[in-house]
Image 1 (cartoon, one colour):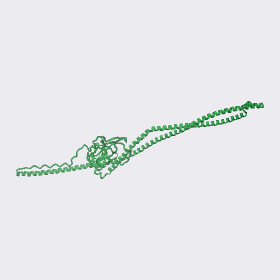
Image 2 (tube, one colour; image 1 turned 90 degrees about the vertical axis):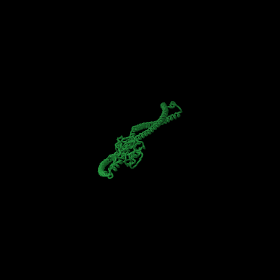
Image 3 (cartoon, helix red, strand yellow; image 1 turned 180 degrees about the horizontal axis):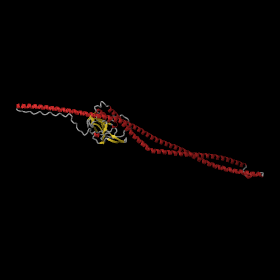
Image 4 (tube, one colour; image 1 turned 60 degrees about the vertical axis):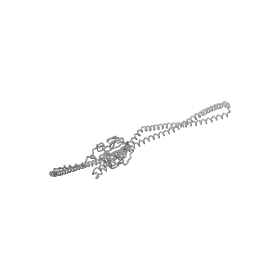
Amino acid sequence: MRSTPRPPARRRTRAVTGAALSVCLLAGAVSQAAADPDPADRKATVDKQLSDANDDLHDTSTDLVKAYEKLKSTRAKLPAARTKATRAKEAEEKAQGEYDDAAAAYDVAQANERKAEKELRSTSTKITTARRAVAGFAGRVYQQQGTGTLSVAVGTEDPSDFVDKMVMAESVGESQGTALQDLSANRANLVSTGDRLSALRTKTKSAKEAKETKLAASKAASTAADKAESELEGLEKDQTSQAATLRAEKKKDEKKVSSLKAESDKLTKVLEERARKARIREAEIRQAREAQEKREAEARERAEAAEAARKAKEKKAASRRSSSSSSSSGGSGTRPAAPAPAPADPNPAPPSSSGVLAAPSTAAVSSEFGLRFHPIHQSYRLHSGRDYGAACGTPVVAAADGTVVAAHVAGGYGNQLVVDHGVKRGSSLATTYNHLESFAVRSGSVKRGQVIAYVGTTGTSTGCHLHFETRENGTPTDPRGWL
């Protein structure tokens, strides 16, 4: 049977499978089943639940494979994501370092600016002082009306006073010269300090802008690193959580399947025992029928012998009468009576065939009964029937005379038709026809070779084909043993 993964897991009501129906057929085939139908009915229920559980397990396994594929894809992205996160962290650290350097440069620039401003204020004070000194000297010169040092000294009357005035006049001249020199130097220093202060302020502004830029870059790098790491952790966490949930669900489904299979196997043994007893009863009935037939045959033989004796006696008497009549009439004899015809055989042999069942389709067999590697469960599983690779719409015929007991949708089997063939070779035999496009019959009796349905691809199927099963006492068997 060709199969494809079912869509994401759906829990839905599924119809009774061929196994359960075949077991129910056994109950109808055995004479005492009506009096004690409970094991067959219970097995039908259990097998339905088992079919549902297997479908659920198939669904869960399919979703689990998809989840693992997503997780595998996610994990394949982890190295690049981790590299991205690492680079983002490195960028963050580098940006932080650059920000720290820019902040330090800004602090130095501010300190230099403050120092320059202090020097500028000091120079301005010196210039003010020098200007006042020069102004004082200018006033005294004006008062002295331009006389020089010698003129001041000549006006003295005392020689010692003359010397003192000469010394004082020279001191005043030196102080005046020094003040002028200081004034000139301070003016030059003021201009230089002002230019340097202007340059320092420009540098401070640039340092501040660099600091703010590096701070923004540092924050952006930190945000990017946090986002990359968060996305990575979230993605892996979600995928891992989903896979864990599906693993738990699969384990639960497997446990349910195992429990139902154990119960189904137990009921199968009960039904097999019932089938064994049915075979014994059938043998007893056959023996009784054969004994009755033997007695009837002996009675017929006795009756035939008595009839033959009677006829012989009548013939002998007639012969005597004829002899007597011949002697009296001149011997015109009579012909003896013809013997009675033999009775017809009451049990004619059935026509011979190549097997109990005929092939349901003339198409080539594409897959036989047996173990196959399952693509979803990744394990070898039983392929419980025989596939005929016919095109959709091709007629399907009944494999033997029987009664249609189901024509419905049966989960992964799609459209399924089940035919009960009664007890054959000591076993309750049923055939199922699966993935059908449509039904030609839905109930009643069918004859061997009669068209009962048409090939399709419903249910779990990848293309048009007929999946044909034979079930003995509810258990799938190789159809080749019956064909």
